[in-house]
Length: 220
Image (cartoon, rainbow, N blue to C red; front, side, top):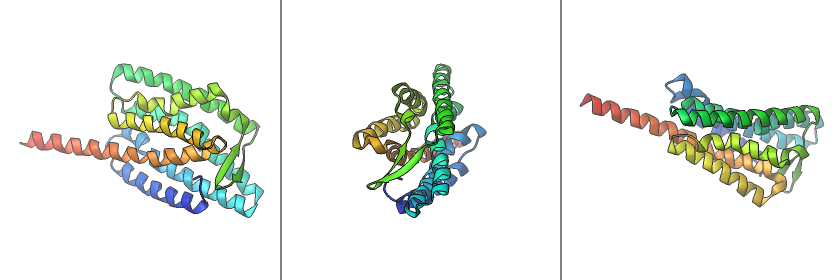
């Protein structure tokens, strides 16, 4: 998280625990990818906590490795994984086709970032109470657009109101993080997005509640 190692570890632990609970609520294989989102965000926040420690300790080798792993989550995983996870739950044909477009956009930008992350390793540094991830290719306009199409667009196209709210929150918090401090956009937005991933739990809670209501109606 963008404030301190302690905050990152607390958020990461809480999200990981919530992610495990959410995974236990799944009933179909198709639900597993979407249910994994809080857990994956939790792992990402734990990694950033370790990035904080490596920067505080001034140890270059662990910092390089941890920064690389964090950026794999933040720039490669999310634009590819979110539309895939949402599409697995979707049943409306036209929405599934639209989600396929988001998947292509996310895959394209994810591979683009992966190429540059491998060729020009990202560096991290502390700026005030935030971590800055330095890599100029992160801020190319078309890459940012494709990233948002994948990461946020996937949610916005869902037939579920809760998942659409998740997509909308991802988009709004991205704009908010950029407006607050563009230099620390990566770290700050990942924090906001991690907190928003708690919406995933609400989706499964409501889905199980609706299923329970339906069973009660049938029983009567």
